[in-house]
Picture 1 (cartoon, rainbow, N blue to C red):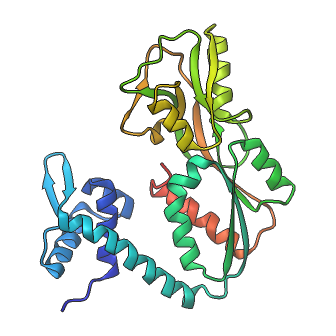
Picture 2: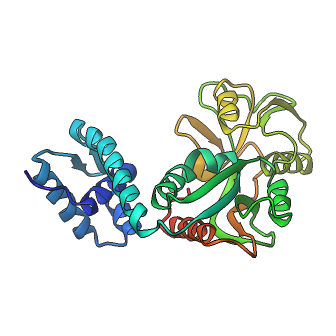
Picture 3: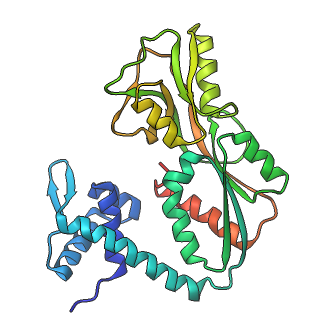
Length: 285
């Protein structure tokens, strides 16, 4: 029986997520030929075809879909074991504040890896849709690190990724012709909501708040149901939603922004560095 090298499994998991070998190579900082070679070695180890390569990328076979789940579990256990020995001395509480759109999406695998790699650190996550509230909590010493969305031209924090806000609606329930325009947005204090309101007011367009929710899932459900138009970063738009490109005024550009308190423990610094590395690898979209 052949052993399964963790390196090959990590490459496979990345390829399974991107379904694009060129993008996989870029994320892992390897040559495309190296990625193909590693995937071929993994298929030889398992004596199974995991990916079907085509003109427009790759897709997982039935065996590949099963391995993706198993590989994630194995990598998770591997990192936990290594963390127990290599990072066991890194202790302390890490208080992270972030928006729901990060907490439920891109941060999930990052925080999972952090918890397993630093088992003696205590992670506490606080989610709030109001970026200014999180900034104030950081300044007041109630949070150690925050990851939020900021206007592209604003000051403060480390700008990790660039994006732009877009209007989205259901593909089967067009609502853009309704007057006043119904909006599905977060409650007051949310940057998305403020941008939508100020942009529509500047364009002289009437609107109303048709649906409000503190969760991204709630907003997406309302958009899918045709209750209202939503506002999302372009990189987070779901496949079953339609971006409104022309009938509504253009929304501003944004940055994913990291703030770290001045005096923090080593565990917090490790998480901040992990988030920075994830941004460089294109994993924060």
